[in-house]
Length: 483
Image: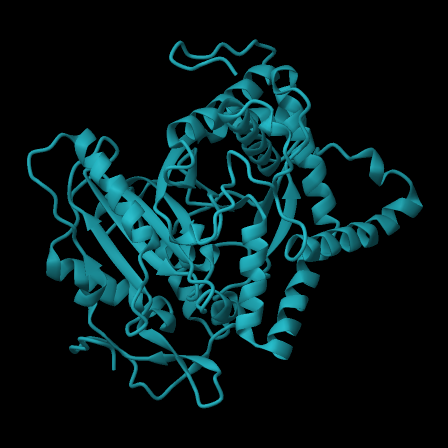
């Protein structure tokens, strides 16, 4: 039984579902990773009993993992064990002094997010929490935060779970719709793909290159210390900041169409350019230092978010859990950031992404982790993942969100974003689309990274790319220094 296990919902404790290999890796002695989903609401959150009823009827049934704890059998194999769930044990409502300004409450919210981002969850109850910030900030009337352990599932499956609990604000009876995952059909094809022989040999070469480099980056090759990588041991336990900016998807698509690229090309190019602007601003010349990003990829056959009815169908659990891989992506080399053409970063991203798509490196890496788990156990595989993260500079992940305005428990959602926390890196970047906007969130090591400068550099990077596409010269705001 769970601690404080008063009656509620849950199983009888007899059925046990094996924990997926990735789930074991992310809840081990060396890794304990969480996902925060932050919803900015336009009205106050529902009261106690109504709030608990919504979680009981709409959230818990999505997956048995939300009403199970992770346990080991006599052979050391981990399983999900159903337990009785007391909803009250999973709801936290922080209190702060009354009568403060929205700006002051925003500071309290940021401090609270920093606190819960690195706080360890109890293993004696299901690995999720709901945090309700019942104070008005410049961005929201109330803020609702779901904290979910990565062992339950990856960003795709966990956000699918949350989307299944949401309703369209205009008509709750209609299903949520999501943008197409397809990119532009007019992508530029790299010259390296020309020629029949190379077209057949290039996937083999890229696979060998990606997999070999991945193994080296996980063991021998380490990114140097830089303005985005402190290189400190135990950085995952240090305080973090979480900040975000919004970019227009219409403007992103404008760049995409003009450059014959994809939305992912434009976003990745913006991140690459923004990172180098930041590195130059913090330490001129440091943008020339090698820096590697781990890009997370969804490897499941299902690429769209499922409805609650679809999730409950037989076999739908196969699309759940942690089904993702990662690829190492080097930031483009930069000789002189002041003379760099912003558009080149989009083309660089496009070239890299096309090569990675031709490679099976991500699948070989997954096979290697599975072999390591079978031969040496899940702790050894978790240590390999920890080393992979620790040796690189940052992680990038993105999720497609709904097109329509949504509501949660009757509260319209103004905006939302997510962040992966407790990674052994100084910088984590996540992106989520919603209602024509792309929310780019930054999780950074507090006291090492400058959150305002980082956000400003990403905004500047996209503005420069957009102006370059439109044939204009970028003019920085008067409050922003020259880069």
